[in-house]
Length: 99
Image (cartoon, rainbow, N blue to C red):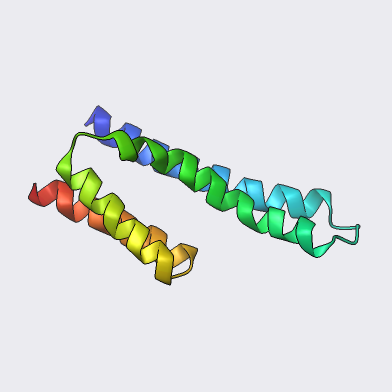
């Protein structure tokens, strides 16, 4: 039961960190004219947060995690961030349950 609590807490904290990295940048710079390059950096920050969370799965010894990682990488090549995250979470959950 405690492990489930930690899992849910981790997911909530990751979502909060991702949301805050995007909104804080926009709020802090709302009165400034930003270049296209600056806007691209602000758009990329949430993805960087997600990559830092996903990176440990690259060294996992669990087959379910490695397969879910491969599925997520394939989705990331074709889809935007939100569907990729949903596919990654769903595939990890299903594969962990089945394996």
